[in-house]
Image 1 (cartoon, rainbow, N blue to C red):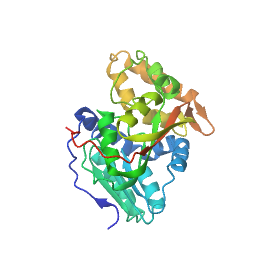
Image 2 (cartoon, rainbow, N blue to C red; image 1 turned 30 degrees about the horizontal axis):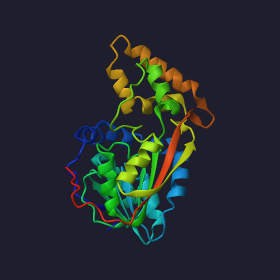
Image 3 (cartoon, rainbow, N blue to C red; image 1 turned 120 degrees about the vertical axis):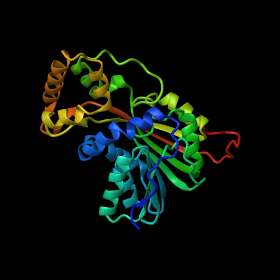
Image 4 (tube, rainbow, N blue to C red; image 1 turned 180 degrees about the vertical axis):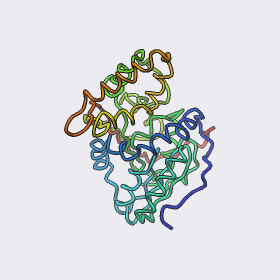
Length: 297
């Protein structure tokens, strides 16, 4: 049966706050604006897909697969393999399953779960990939160790992640337009949690990976064809909601107007473009015995 549906209830998540966010407002927002969000990162995705280089016979794990565009792309390449997409959001996975069914893909499975704690079959995947879905783990070493155990020896890991907040105009421009305070440096899960290549290399080495590389991707994000559409999409983003929640009722109308004006100012013939920087991170699962004493809560 195409696009096999797994039970809707997720595995216990190691990060209940992230589970609530992604299985709640952030998931709903990404379903509503799925096509727009996929187009937003189309240039980054082209680079990511080329480096992931999914093979015809590959068994692929897609971490934080969302509405499943990257999963479906992998499935179309792995015609004699299989792709498993995992995500915390039941609503996004519902859309992913529906779109996979409509395309007649019969080599896809979606599971609502936390990749940090899910009990994957050991050594069952050739490739683990994640397109902006790997920055939200509560314990990155534990999470990537768990993913590594699911990979065969020599299996590849390919991640697309944001570089530092200061190198991503979209983040600062929205916050500044809304009149929010400068973003504090916060450790822990979030969009910029894997922004430091040296720190990521240490995480992956501790998790049993080697042959680490970080490839610079300098491409703009596209928020839509014009400022009106871009505003509708941006207003529901988690980062936008967080800033707006700190403003008074008197401040809100001016904040909304400044956001509209900022997005209109970034209109181009190609759409509303804001500068961004990402890393494509690659690594290889080492051929080693895993520590049987390692436990996942």
